[in-house]
Length: 415
Ligand SMILES: [Zn+2]
Image (cartoon, protein in one colour):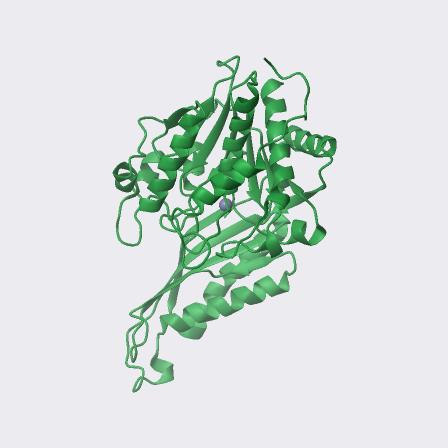
């Protein structure tokens, strides 16, 4: 039986919720959220559970060399490029139960709904779990999607180390998710990603769906600050080369850049590493990461320029050497106009309240947008809280967005 009417399908929200709550029990954090780091035991347990669910839904499961999982529900014309729906199942160290997870499990719910009704689609539909979106244990973030789309060399990804020296490729083998071969990145008709907004706009405006048109332009850098050990008592101020002071100046001034470009601009130093980090001795080494974001790519570039100029200022004030050892940028993307239109038309048809929105966070979809027509759907989260165990959503916040995903993806797969 094939689909004759469009936009008439509805997911089973109770089933989606039960599935989410099983995920919420794998890799619990300190309070109510998750701490499910990439390629750890909990990531393995979640992947195993996800693969079981996909096989129970009669999907064919394949894994590529960086551990991305693809679960395929064959279409009527299997030689046509499939429609992909995906996100990630890894979490932040103090993460919520829904960031990324909702997107993957909504994809699974799309397939289960089609199975319930015995509905065939013309193109195959695949649910994807991308490896290491969060970048907590191995950097950079969005690693699996980046390798898949050709931004990162696969062998380079496999050679990355975590802070304890564990090798990405070996960890992948250890948990049983080192797949045999790379997948053809050209073999995609469209990519959909549903994600919680991770910001407060939809919640504040009481809307159910954000149709993401693109991302904030983001620039990041890692700085290394070299000072010199010295006694914190006898060493006169003018003789000090204090790496921690260099780091502190950068951190304080980055925040000032954020305030200068607020409310739309955002500037952060999320991580500092300092050594020896002991009483009585001046630090000889520090590392600070810089992260600036703005919806206007020119202003984002201007913010980054100001951030880079801080290096000379902090270096002079603290009498230390500062080097930028790594730089990156993402988010300056426009999602596919046809898919954005399709999602909007679907939301209108289903009578779901919606608005256009930009994403201020990084997503796997950014990498996918370089190789295939891509779009994202945001659903609300309470007070916009995310990367926090208190991240909270409810079935009522979510069901409309997943129904939009279901009908839009099926329409695309039948086009
Ligand atoms: Zn995410």
